[in-house]
Amino acid sequence: MAGRRARKASWPAPVRLWLLARSGGAHQLSFDTVAVRPGHAVTDAWVQRIAAHLRLPPPGAVVDMPPLPSPGAPAQRHATLAAAPPPDGDRDRDGAVALPPGIRAVLALLGSFLAVLEATQAFALLRALCTGTLYSRAWRGGPHAYHWDERPAAFLLQSAAGLGEVLIVGMLAWGCLRLAVGGRLR
Image 1 (spheres, helix red, strand yellow):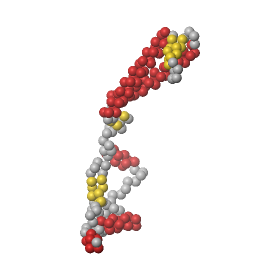
Image 2 (cartoon, one colour):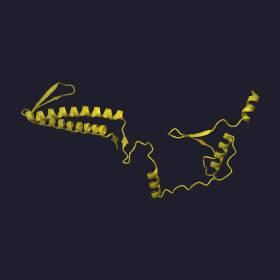
Image 3 (cartoon, rainbow, N blue to C red):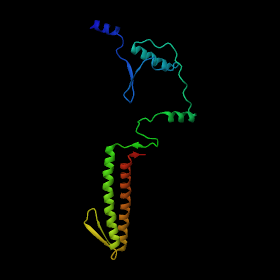
Image 4 (cartoon, one colour):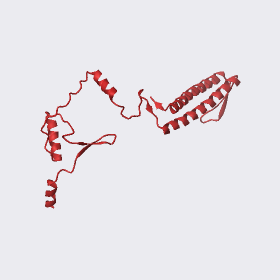
């Protein structure tokens, strides 16, 4: 067992450090491929620990790095941001995100359902205004009829509530259908 440990200690380090990008690309980290700013005690200690772990000599040459941009230089920052490609690739120039086809199909179905519901409510409200009788159904009760001749205040209140429902459901249906057809979410 002691002979096996002695042989392992004499082998070169089997471990190498790799930097994995989000795109899946790999980049091996070594003192030749990564520039480190020397001069700080913490940085020098970190470099010594990595060199000891990899069983490599620490780098002796000082690498000059470009200076960091100052926070008060907005022109450079905007030029850098404008030149950089978008991170995901699914955003266009306006910042809109392309919706996947499955979500567009669900939005189309939901928008169609809400449009049909809104149309039936709008026709019921129009018929009530023409005839003077509004039929409604309570959550826990049965159907109820409001007549203009008998109770005008209740008829107007229920008509206003129906009109609000038609407007809100109509806006939701329009938004769903607009997103489904356009395919872009801003």
